[in-house]
Image (tube, rainbow, N blue to C red):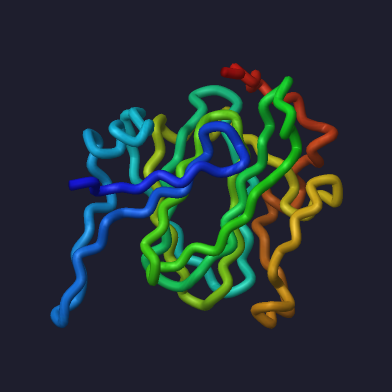
Length: 192
């Protein structure tokens, strides 16, 4: 039995993962992580740390990456809803500076796989939103980097009107992140 369905996106290696859900009148059961089964759909990294964030409606976290000790991520929502954004920052990529955005909630159990070479962030669309994500390397604050969430060159349409978000909240650190044109990405497109 296949436990995970992989849906490729416009970016090489970024994928949407849909786990098989067993549901009946008692509720549901699913596996959110199974190293062997995920490797069968092309996600073979070893994940070493689990993180959880709790956010109020209108909170933006990101767009983050680490310049060294870079991290792949498996991102999912266990409460609330987010608009999840992945930005290609691989030098030499045809899609450098492009992004994809997808709404995630616990209703469909979707997981987003973010490989190394991409900045990642999200906006909480509901109060008490909880995001859980696995990472493939340990957090290293000395290599923490990012891109400003509202960089006009990225052209991200955050769904503030759709969700009646009157005030976007970002951390002081994220509010002063550089624009895409001002970063020195350490990542190279490997091509296939």
